[in-house]
Length: 147
Image (cartoon, rainbow, N blue to C red):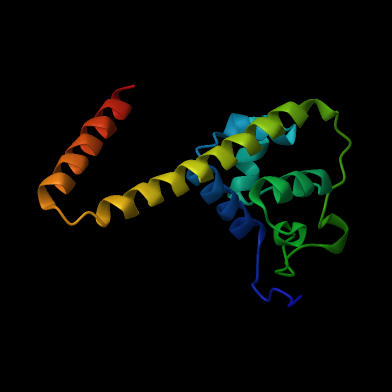
């Protein structure tokens, strides 16, 4: 395995977590529940002002499908003693963790289905038929925005 030479600070790790949450429509409270932390803690993690605990790193690694070392800053700004805080927490966040994981997986499946559908529509040669499909998609998208 080739070592990742990308320099990651707490701030860039927080940005990656924010991007993943936005992509998968995960709100701060859902992530907080999954990590068994407060919503304010999630905000601080995303802002790069709070380090992740080893338990949070393990959970995020599974949720975001990334290696655990991705979540450990390697920018040498951190004191070795404080690089990872170890905190004992109850396992109350397990159910929320599974919900967030399921939601992210479902979103990924929906994105793949949408990409496949778009590929099919782009392959239609008959312009009138293609136009009807596009109009139907626009109507359905408008309906989805309302609800």
